[in-house]
Image 1: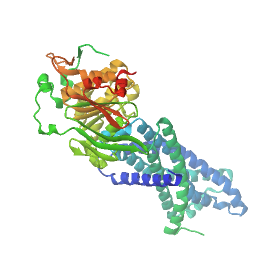
Image 2: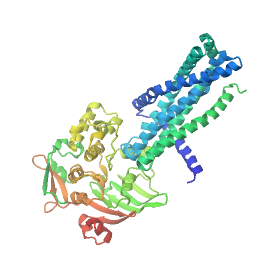
Image 3: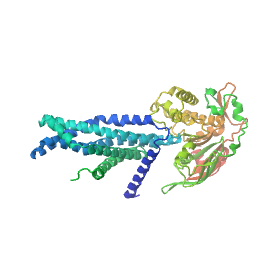
Length: 256
Length: 306
């Protein structure tokens, strides 16, 4: 099978798996406990790295943009620029990438190990559909927690930028805040949610599919994990471009 | 490796699965005439089943039946497609051609939800136990009942009963990682037997185990066959297993203990047959005596090991 055929096959299988997970979501048993457990692992578990990433990204953004803006005499706009960049772009993408690194690998390795130790076969033999029991709760948990993590990353990022701007560059706190408020619109926030939800779906679908199609023992688990993280990360970056363009058209966001 | 003529196991018959009704009058239930019109239908039947993975042919037109209450030992070298047969019965794989019947029902083209219904009546024992790592022994054995939403007090009673059946009640709170290989398989057996399935699949359950533990696993298979009227497919390549299962039977003695007796003057086992698979074909089908008399060079080498 050549590379192109394999890619098309993977896209097809991943889509089918996601559709199956969505269609069987409301059939009993609903595995609510699994879902809450996964939200804890994915959401609460990723909080530390998201806070650190958000804080330092916001900080460095202010650190880099202030001198450039000052050149044009627009240093008061630092808050506005940082907030827009974070909420529209960096918040969702960086959160997506961090979660892809931390969670896609974990999901893929866990499901992959279950495949090679025949636990998935055992589950099916015991009358449980692994798509409903394992895939659906993870997808739902990701779709709920990733947008929330993104909001936290955005807020912490703006906080980081505020500290840098006011403490290092001496911008007045009120000037920074008003820049943030003026710069952000509800469309930016909606766009951020749309992006982060889409990224969550990408992470979940790619990781679960890679995990469940693991072949070849422990080496196969390693391979699936790597593929899951790489594929999810690249797809997030690519999807970000197309979603941004789509949002510009649909929400009528500024294009130039 | 011959065992002693009569071995006594300290198993209280009240701990055995309910469906077999051995505790009331064990001897009667073991040898009683069974009046059931459905018994004529084989528990499992393969009709001209073909299966290939890419270009590699795994099964090449296999046909055989497993009758009610019968144990079918499936012999063959590694990679010969033995485990594939079990996966086809459970619908974990689909045949390229031919038909697979379970309880007279053609499952060949069943969808996944339809297969879920069929799987509920089949117990499957995996090669390494395939226990869920993240769940304790109790949760593993209770898995099927938890999925069905059975109340917790009933679940605990059933789990303890099944763990007593495999002599592992002490391990109830342990995690799978703390268990030895043999214990893991016994927990796997307990898990598979919850709900009293009438068809049980064994996928090389004794591979890599020491002889006494392997013997224990075989004894469980014998108990299921003789005391519970379970039909089973027992995939193995170990001749010790064959020896035990084809020459011994389980009865409950006057003291209520399960004892294993060797076939001989009192009883000749007819509910255990063997098929041997080679390169995707059945090369032998019959009893252990016929197998030993067979002069096919591959079979004689397989039996003797040289």
